[in-house]
Length: 110
Length: 122
Image (cartoon, rainbow over all chains, first blue to last red; front, side, top):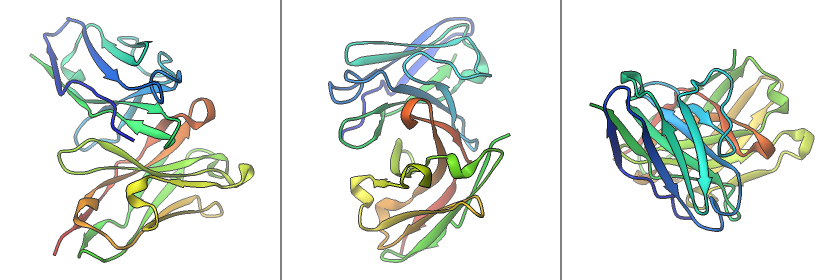
């Protein structure tokens, strides 16, 4: 099972919006509405941001939103803040192995 | 508050073994499906394996790279999750995270621990 494809890095200025893509195949992203997104800060426990493409768990800022079109899912961070600087990973349910992660994206706040 | 605390990591030689533990609290552990996810230094996240609750049969699934070498188990009486790692290879060097499965049919990783580092080196 190959990892889902994400851009290695995305950057933006405070207050701007950025979008991170996550591209898979018909066996994962394209076949199921089970894409989730995670935020990783160094030394901290990873955090679930978005589940099932666009659901935001309780306590997650509404600046984070998710969507999907075809084989590509996207995470949008609006009103970018310094605290958003972190690594972000998508994940999808798959028809072969239960789960596959994306390659990861480093977000830099300029 | 959900808490997951991993332990048991360390430095081990290639071919060696370790048992990782995850202490869970703040939720009904016996109902939870649990996973191990790892991250090698400078690399991305990789799902390692999952154990379902005994209420639905306790099935265990593993990622291909660890099948036959790693064993997941749970002790619901102690709220503990375990990962026995055998025949370790240098490429198993990673931070190992304990996570809960959540969302519909366990399709997301709802809660994570802070991880425990396993270093495989001679």
